Amino acid sequence: MKLIRFGEPGSEKPGVELPDGKRIDVSTYTEDFDRRFYRENGIDGLREWVEKNGDKAPAVNGVRLGPPVSEPGKLICIGLNYEDHAREGGMELPKEPIIFFKATSSICGPNDDLIIPKNSQKTDWEVELAVVIGKEASYITAEEAMDYVAGYVLHNDYSERAFQFDRGGQWVKGKSCDTFAPLGPYVVTKDEIDDIHNTRLWLKVNDEMVQDGNTSELIFNIPFLVSHLSEFMTLQPGDIISTGTPAGVGLGFEPQRFLKPGDVVELGIDGLGESRQEARAYGA
Image (tube, rainbow, N blue to C red):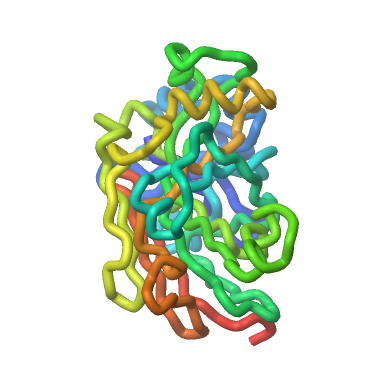
């Protein structure tokens, strides 16, 4: 299934995109796609509900899409998880996953505007595959890790490189500005994807293809990441893990390239849909 949330920011309702592209309101089944929904194994119940009621549910095509997960407790990111991306940044390959957080206040809808932060010099793009956790995970093995995955979602891990590298402290400062985590268009349940570790992901800036990679190139795969993270923190239903970006970010260009107002960023992952953000200046 493809789970969506639709409506104005802060007032989104849950929905489903059907195989024929029709989008329907499922708020009579569940209030939202939040921690409680995933904790109570809502996906299985929703699938049965849609089979029985999908043809009668209100259509919502043409309505703004919000982030498809409601208020996740954690947005965990993995740095330098593609060899070509590490090398383009002149960094050593990690021996263990590099872990950082993005503030959940950075999350927005898939097609909302990107707000270039006040005093930004180096706002950059990063297409990423993100994983949605379906049930509580603590000290789990890699062999059982996929049982804890509910689905997958497209994520653009926007980064302000001057904030990230030149201002001291951790990477989170360059990762957490408002609108820096557009998610969606939908969460795709894991049964919909044949091989998540052989899936194309790409990103364009002003129609120019700048990132074109494949998840087969991940240094640390999804079962390893879920297991590894569960050693250091309890993963809760609705938490999101973003697995890293392939080569082609603005930081890696020679000369470096960064976003400016009016630029259009488009990105996608096979099976997970596409998103589009137009950049505008803070306060504009």
